[in-house]
Length: 269
Image (cartoon, rainbow, N blue to C red; front, side):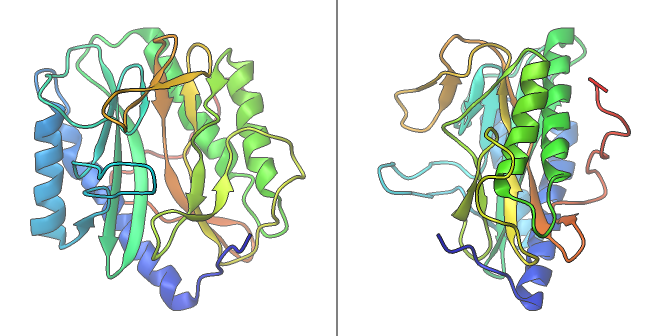
């Protein structure tokens, strides 16, 4: 397995792409209200990316082996949808939770991130807790990143925290290396054993994007060929950042003015 080490020039391009990817989420935040459709959210994000930022929406027509081309510019995963939800004409309801997964391409480099959004003022406390625990999981994973650490350290820390909360970790989808290529080595698992897997080196860039289910971890793919849901119909949540291994630790690249802050303390202490 060959994991690319990015040059200083590539890292700077990834900083720009990461910031722009995050700024799409900043832009769309006020529009996430009851009654809006995910298709409208997709349209707004597409126009902002193309007309304002001059970026390319990476998911649009993305077609890995075994898939049909993805038909939209963003992924919108509502309630029990784990990932890759395709925007549609169904309005969001008060109390829904939705993950927006945004990847832009700028000057040939990808900025990939996602956030959870609470729709309206009637989101159940258990849904808010799932989102917060998943956010904690992402940051606990990020905190493992430093030269000399193993990629298994990330998954082990995330799995321990999620399961302590009574949740399960999706295993079929994971974080990934990223740069000029959307998905490259390594695979960054969100479960596993500390001290296993490849060793991190300064200059590596990858995503950490845990998908955490309130119920069991088993998944089901819908007939559209893309949408992944929880098999037991329980809620799922996901947060994602793109991370650089630095000489002394890590740098989160998907940062903008509206990026939620790192937790001052974790929900489970």
